[in-house]
Length: 132
Image (cartoon, rainbow, N blue to C red; front, side):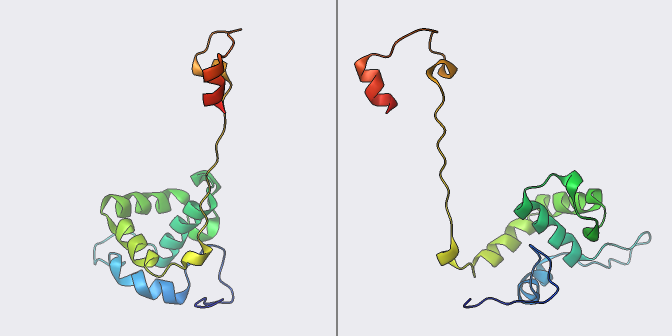
């Protein structure tokens, strides 16, 4: 548990206060002084983006606690297009604990007919060796 910060009440996939303090200044200001509807809280929006990225769920299954999925998606696209998310994830990855890194390599073999082989064709001895 070295270097871990446990915050009570923190929901799954949300940033800790320490992580938030590292990136808060990288986001555009919430209050721009423009007229109209006030901007949504950057931390809530970012936690929603992280939730989508980590959970793998579709946008339409987005939890209500982050606001409408369309709003978070819009902010996600803007920050992505502006390069803000690349910069944030680069900063956060500097402190990654690599002993917890997991790399998965899954290989799925397809039947020979799915690769365009003729139906009923038999593999020759050299082809059998390559298939293994």
